Length: 487
Image (cartoon, rainbow, N blue to C red; front, side):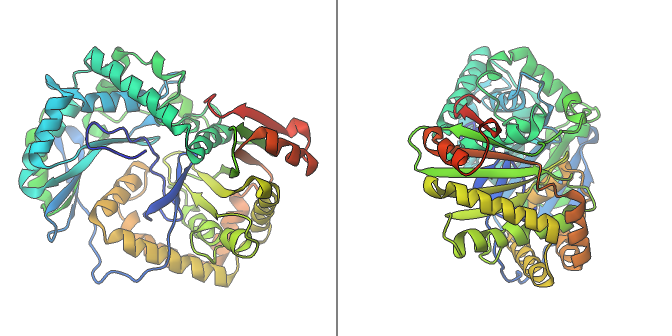
């Protein structure tokens, strides 16, 4: 979804692609962002680690200083997001955060927008399974007033009934709009196919069935539970010192209530089960000339010791580089698809390995078969030394590009923080990638790949594709046809 400065609804996921801090560019995949990364030279200077300070009521303050810039990128992040939504009330976190942005401290949406416009500033809402974020940019000289607006929104939301209902309608309209995009449709269905009723299996923006069940009192309860000191991170990147930012935050957020971060959603405590065998979910969308193929499996938490070795393997197999296995075999050698990628998500809970291939309907069957064969080969054979070296180069280059942008660097630090990774993870990632051995990569693949137990989702026209699936030898009972707009 394209963010807007006026009470933005931006509920795309914040997972990383082939690299936790790579630029996410291609398409969303089951709440995962497909990244397009390529090797690039390191920047002339390497930024130091972010400064950490205690914030009000037990919150955390993070500052990534970039003195040369006139703009400060500011983020207030909650260490909880749509993964905490109650079952059958999916979309609660998004509705609560967006409605708060649209009316707070007795000020209407238009008045809040006018205050931001007077500063030349932006403020958006982004929700993913692991975090809820209020973020934007402001000139350094207006930072204190920007924090005042942010404090009004987060500490004093009005949840005026009319605005709550308008926000709900906007979210429902966004779901309808998403139905026009085949990749987004596939993303929604694949997430549910892979995770089932686990909270990670639902889109952060909710569903047509769940959003009408969310009530105003649910929004208030969400803020009472989640907007507490131990659950809040206040972060900035730009021309501001750590002590000065911490002091400004202390003034503006003095009313932040104390409290520990809420425990995980009880629904998320249980491990997602994942698929057994190969079963194809055919998402029926009329008059499609192309097919969007999604396949994948459950993987590991970001804090798992095997995360970085799997990241290297995933980059080798499904990175944007033309030498990546999927791109080379599916697109370059055989011209079966326009693009072929796989990514490893960075999650507090159990993440996913997800592949995405876009091809014509006529080529969907051979493309699917080849993609699955390649993934089985990855499980059984691993990667070789040349593939390891190439993946390490791509990851290091993409890291250099990402770390040269203060806002993206701050985003990476926050994502790592909410995923339970150590403070030095982002800065130490290049060294960890370089130090990863071939044995570590292939051992991780043997431990975690389940290439014969995959969720497979195809967005296409069932009337055209289902007969071809059956002709290829797939049993009719192994294909589930679902309408594209049912979820």
